[in-house]
Image 1 (cartoon, rainbow, N blue to C red):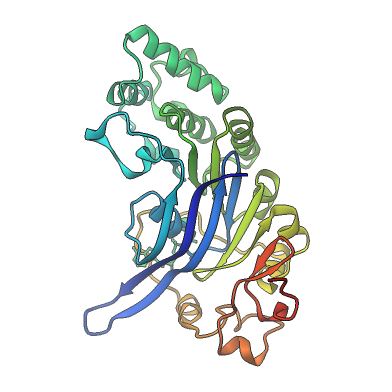
Image 2 (image 1 turned 120 degrees about the horizontal axis):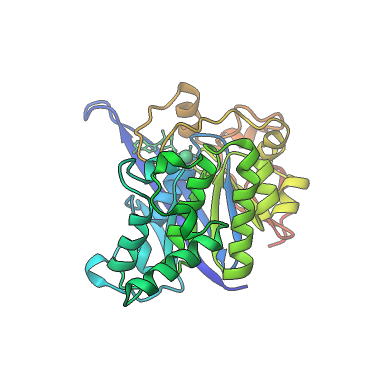
Length: 324
Ligand SMILES: Nc1ncnc2c1ncn2[C@@H]1O[C@H](COP(=O)(O)OP(=O)(O)O)[C@@H](O)[C@H]1O
Ligand SMILES: [Mg+2]
């Protein structure tokens, strides 16, 4: 397996409040992981743990406070005037709410033809149409079905497919999908996550699948990283992490998938709840206040990343078992 993206010691600090009463939180704290070629990597955890901030840094929407993001297999931009970080690295974003991705007053096909034109992907109208039809077929739709239709004429699930199809036009290597099914009808969620599998298998696209829903994460992903208050606390092959969770937080998460708030949007400036803030400010393990197995050291020292077999776990309980 070769890495497509290498994230090392990634950190993001946010400051709150007035200049006089500045509060800082480290929304993403020393996070490291790779995404391999043709891999679906899930990033999971309850709302406010730093998933979206991580995604936004990878996309270049948010400055990095420290650490590095290395796109190992960058593609040459086809048009440097429009060179955007994510595009030149072969990365595309799929947003939570497809109805916000498209202007309600424009037929959706226009977005496709605009992308083809902007990136000079075809040299005739006929070729452009064929290309658009091919990407729509890759997601189970066709140009016929989409032509002349406005966003409101699609269901959420269909429109999410349309937005995935559009992202495929530039032949991305990595899709970053932040809660892509949380606005989609429960009955259609599987068809969207299946689509990610199909794109991985047939087009060798990798997907960073961000979700608070462990059931779809288990179903769709190859590996998973669990975040808690800015820390990546467990990482490994999805069966290992979700079937034999090591970290007490992962164990809890598996039993009671916490209420997440799917309405929190990418760009929304959110205020911290008291508990969230208190946990972010903890000196030791951020989870110690809620952890049924917390020990004295957990309240004072942040655990190291420990490697147990193929799994990484950030928890003092395993300090003696580490195989490094
Ligand atoms: N632009 C911002 N300014 C200040 N704090 C932010 C900003 N964006 C996110 N945060 C805070 O960072 C933490 C992580 O947020 P986020 O990455 O959106 O988490 P998730 O996507 O896992 O719900 C939260 O406490 C959130 O309030
Ligand atoms: Mg989020």
